[in-house]
Length: 576
Image (cartoon, rainbow, N blue to C red; front, side):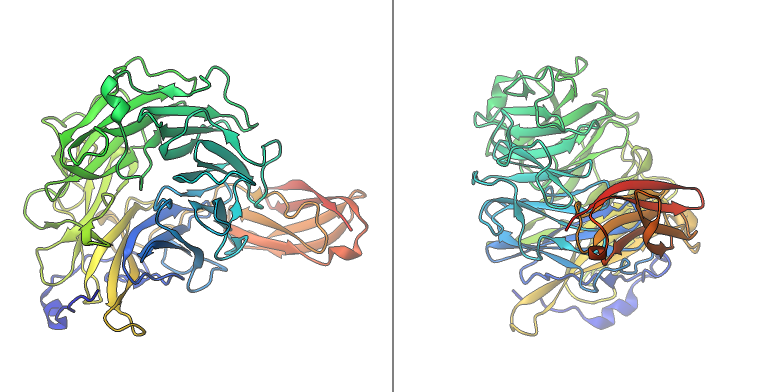
């Protein structure tokens, strides 16, 4: 496909853009990724890392496959320490069973996990990008999440203590961050008792996981699994059915590109599904349940109707940070939203049904994505939760057409404009005058926003085709424009589990330092003697390796990281 370039001269007539943060150009900077897409990018997802950096994940589509890439950036827009200029490729997989957005997770050490069916080998698989910019086990493959079960179907992943959970086809597996199956877990995974499609998994807050699925009878249900590979006590073997409405045997969730299961406080979740099944005219239902396996008695037994039946698409669900949920969707070429609180009610001032997110005027343009039949609406609404139950909403703005421009709105919990920002949002004008579409937005730690978009440029190798480049900028809140933003810092000293363990030639650790004070990583024998040592300095995450272990006697050793405030220790076995 080819897009007609815009006239560069038209940019001279554009209004001045509000300043962006520090080293982020107002017109954006390209985020170089290993897999640019010929046919377009379906989503850009941004994850917060423990170090204060962000991981930018691009999902590109080309032909009959998806290509996945990840890059780490600092809050000032620099490439993360140790990361290659082009980021990391997470491989390509067939589109048939591949989730686009909810197949990613961040664990407690900053590892980015990716799950999909169809990697090599041709079965459910998972892989991760470690904080030190290493993909395990390889750049284009994954280890199998099961040794002999090749059931196809949607997959998902979520962080777990020391690794991640991966679900597929009615089964769940726990993997460590070294790529091994967790101790005590069967090689073929654990049967959930619920199976179907629209699978989603979330941490339960106690080391286990809660799994959502639409069962073969098209009934929404959930199951809870503990970290020791057993069903949580008190939960039905066939899962907890979420609705008593007989019509919900025809439920589904469209699309499967977002999480239909979200945390709602420390011990509850909210699940979502659409009905009727496989219809362009449908509504969105919600149900709240407890981690003890019971439905919230304050909610209707048949679930809560959050969106009345209409010709809706691109349903997007976001947690509000206070136990509630933002339900967003496209209908009639506009973007709409409804904010449902944990109580089942709506915020004060939100009455009269759904609220249009773009506000007054006709400047909203529906973000589009490429498909085999041309360009269709993006499969999710470009929005992100912000502090205090607020919402960030980004969209393509057509008021300066034919020039490209985007707008970011800060909305209160009732979706009224945040009075601290312009009521119609902040304008971003990309520096590159080429066709482009907004692809992602994410709240930063100081009340601002990261914004990502895709720019289509001619492919020099294949005339007539385009390459989708990812560009980003950062907007400070208006109250801080012109002030250098504080960089998020970790708050505690951490030392990861040694890898490998037992170790032979070398052993590696992930160390997080809370400030810029110097620290030291040491390997100590049982007599208390330091046999290997390495210094490290600088707030944030560090990858540390101790080498030449072959000269040491085999046996028990201790890895220790120490700074001015204290120390942490882990056991290491040295083997021949």
